[in-house]
Image (cartoon, rainbow, N blue to C red; front, side):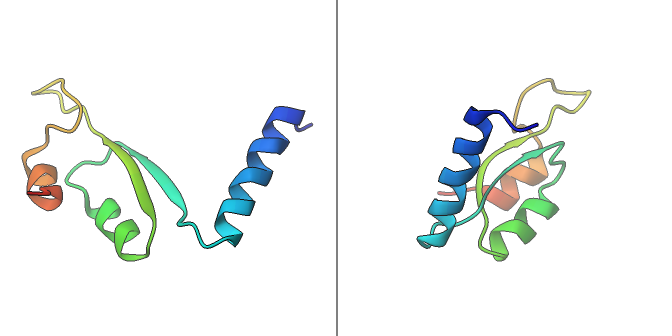
Length: 72
């Protein structure tokens, strides 16, 4: 059974997509960011990338991911 809140959220998402908005994603266990690059190429807006390698317990700290997604 879908709650009223969940139904409202779903309706808002569908309305945003129908009005031309991009789909959105959150990637968990993003590794080097290969899936994220594919999602971006497909026009999907990425809200965040989360990766916590054993050797460095910080979010978004993968050296390869930094190279792939460096914005300036």
